[in-house]
Length: 89
Image (tube, rainbow, N blue to C red):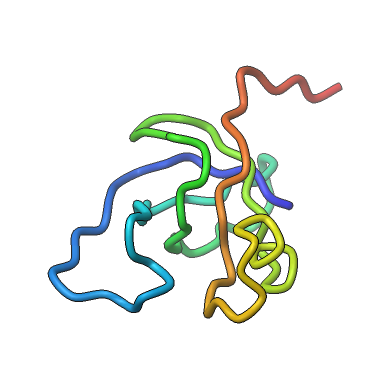
């Protein structure tokens, strides 16, 4: 699981059947100050997130497929929740 910020959406005219009726969002991983930055990636939205939201992402293929209840899906990253706040002690 990782925390990320939604930075954009992906619009397609043709997509894989496993992506039908699902929104694709561009997300930027959040890292601790001083850690290296990670590349943005695309995740399937399963929680009605929007641009600017901080989200929790399952970025492991088998877990993502279980969340979507599709064991054959070609999916690696799925947004599983919207984060209200984060406190780092």
